[in-house]
Picture 1 (cartoon, rainbow, N blue to C red):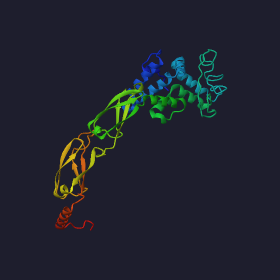
Picture 2: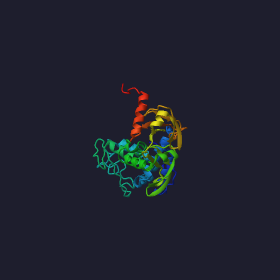
Picture 3: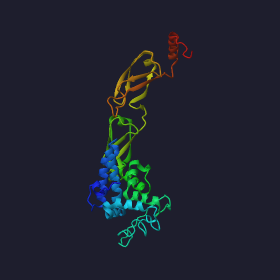
Picture 4: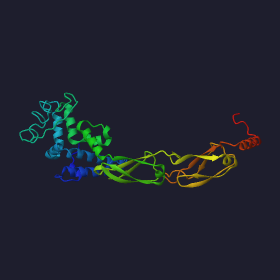
Amino acid sequence: MDVRDYYQILGVGRTATPAEIKKAFRKLAREHHPDKKPGDKAAEQRFKDLNEANAVLSDPDKRAKYDHFGKDWEAYARAAKANAGTGRGAGAAGDPFGPGGAFAGYAGFGGPGGGNIRYEFHTSGPGGSGGAGGAGGGGFSDFFEMMFGRGAARGATAGTGGSARGGGARMGREAYAMLAPAEAIAEITLEEAFHGATRIVDVGGRRLEVTIPRGVDTGSRVRITGRGPDGRDLVVVIKVLPHAVFTRRGADLDRELPVTLREALLGGEVTVATLKGRVLLTLPAGTQSGKSFRLTGQGMPRLKSDGPGDLYVRIRVTLPTHLSEEAREAAAQFLDLARQPDPRR
């Protein structure tokens, strides 16, 4: 591992408070998050370095050890690895700072120099107990990873399912949670999805007004930078409520239009309500029930491309009911003249 100046990586002084470290980390991590620069290896490495620095400086014990060893961390790591397997590397009780350990007697870590800092680590390697203070060849590996936060860097990159172990995974999850955007749900009508809308959402006790663009659909996500809790981004997830008349298919709309027997038989102009307003549809004579007409450009606006979708109007012929005797006789005479063939043959 390269020796790094964690304070320089985060752009803070060595006397920086925990709050200043936290603020600097969040700002830089948002700026260099791999999701914002896909495929940029330099940004990915920078993001890992930031997590690594934060994993050490945000933990009081780790920061104290880092301040104590400084640039000599790598040398102590090599010495401890060289001692592994000789009986000197782990110490009598599996403690690298205990008697016989690689850091035995080092001032400030339980040796004669005083100090009350105590570091506990876990291992599942050979000779390890699986609990605090576990030892053996794998013990120092886990200790070194936890001290420097490499697991934290991997854990943050992979989210909560990262491959880091022990404290590294924990730090990775904490870093990921700190960077993950806050979420809120906004329910809107189809008309609001068509025209655009604003919504007030409650996030962490704060009421925020969110502008919802035209063309959103259920599952659309509106991201607002820096407006969430602790300065995180806010993502508003859209849910479009069902409509009584229109059914949506992406940018296209479907609706049913009831027409009279006269309109279907003789044809004519009928009024169709759309989300834009009312338009006239010309029905040809003899329009069958179930026939669909396409009204170009009368659908939903598209969120990320030009031009709206279309409206498909399906005809439903409604027959007259409660006929008088005179109307029944007239209908019979008409049907005799029409001589309609059997549609079931």
